[in-house]
Image (cartoon, helix red, strand yellow):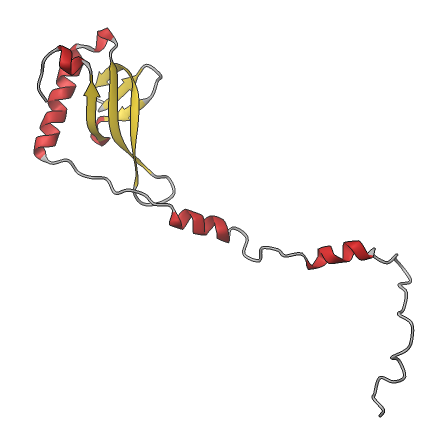
Length: 143
C-alpha cells in the first residue's frame, strides 16, 4: 500500500540552522493554561459582592435621633463614648453598607451636618441611623 508521504516518512527531523533547539522540559511551558479574559474573574467577584440599600428613617425615628443629638451637644466637653450606626456609599456600585463607629465625640456641627470623633473620623448626620451612648443613662433621658 502506497501513501503520498512514503518518500519523507523515514527522514530524520530537520535541525534548525539559526538557533538552538528548545530543551524538552521547556517545551511544555508554551502549552500552559492562560487567562484569555483578563480581569473576568475580578469582574465576577465584584458583581457577586452584595451591597445594601439605604433605609430611610420615618418621622418618629428622625425625631428621636434629633433629641439624642440635642442631648449629646450639651455633654461634648465630657468626652464620652458614642456608638454610631451610619450608612456609607459604595464607590464601585449602587448601594453601600452600614458601618459602626465607636469613639469619643468631639464635635457636632449643625451647619455642616457632621459628627466629629477624637480619631478625626467624621460622619454625616444625614447618614446616621442610630446613636447609642452611656451618657443617656446618666442624664436619665428615655429614648
